[in-house]
Image (cartoon, rainbow, N blue to C red; front, side, top):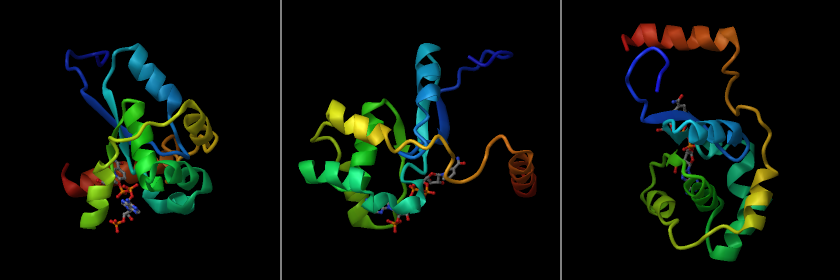
Length: 142
Ligand SMILES: NC(=O)c1ccc[n+]([C@@H]2O[C@H](COP(=O)([O-])OP(=O)(O)OC[C@H]3O[C@@H](n4cnc5c(N)ncnc54)[C@H](OP(=O)(O)O)[C@@H]3O)[C@@H](O)[C@H]2O)c1
């Protein structure tokens, strides 16, 4: 529930990836019965060598899956919707093929160790970022 209106937010789309895991936001959303979290850029747009990250690839090898699939499964198991993007048909197929394996507690602990608690893109609390967003919205008549 938003404090000053009756509308119920259904989906809250925020940056979530193995380097910026947003566990506190997830706990908060769950505790308050708030909106479902949706991960934008769940692969961090490929930054920091995410697709060849040794922890993610080693977990994937155990299940015959790629690092990308491990990330999507990890989000799925946390109850988070992944907004993953690919222009390649085979990768689209790969990215939906995550329902035949399950991560162990040990896998999840290893993924947790990748947390840097830092946006991979920009600081959302920086006034300059806010200015950029405002300009973006204004110039597009959103
Ligand atoms: N709300 C916001 O502020 C916000 C901000 C950023 C993004 N988004 C949205 O989030 C969605 C996804 O974001 P994004 O495209 O920026 O980042 P992303 O999904 O994290 O990463 C996309 C990159 O991953 C590659 N990729 C996809 N699947 C792969 C796989 N299985 N193996 C290897 N590489 C793979 C893609 O390459 P190919 O395409 O060549 O496969 C592309 O380079 C988009 O719809 C975007 O609009 C929202």
